[in-house]
Length: 162
Figure 1 (cartoon, rainbow, N blue to C red):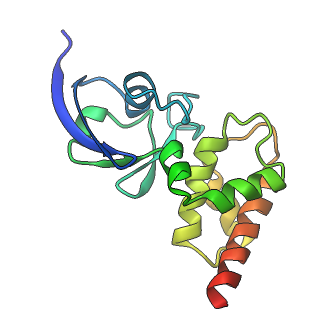
Figure 2: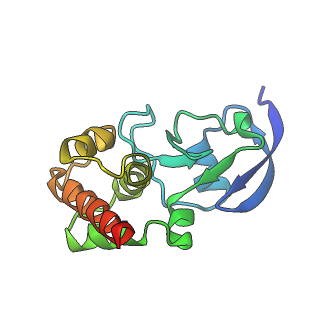
C-alpha cells in the first residue's frame, strides 16, 4: 500500500507543496515532479555523486534522501545555483579548463565544488581532491576539475584582497 504525505518545501527559491509517496527519493521528485533534470540519477546508492543537490545549505545525495522527510526544507539544484549566478565563475572555469567532458557528473561536481569555495576558501589542491572525491568522473581524470576549482579559489581570493 502506497502511503502519501503532504509537504511544503522551497526549491530554488520557490515554495512547492505536494502530496508525495513516502518512498519517493528527492532526486526522483526533482526530476519527475518538478522537471528539474540537471542533477542526474547515477548509481542510486549514494556513491557516484551525480545526484548531488544542496539541502538546507549542505550538499547531499538526492538518491538517499526521502522527499517526505523534507517538509520545511530548502533545496537548491544546479538550475537554481546557475540562475542566481552564484557559480558563474566556477562554470566558466570548468569550460576554460575542459573540466566537463561528457557532462554527466558535472552538475553534481559543480554543487560539490561550490561548497568548498564557501567552506574552505584557502583549500589546497589536495583538499580540493579530497572534497570532490565522492563525485565520480570517468572522463576527465579529475585534473582539469581540480585546476578549475583552484583557479576560482585563487580568483576569489584576489578579488577579495583588492
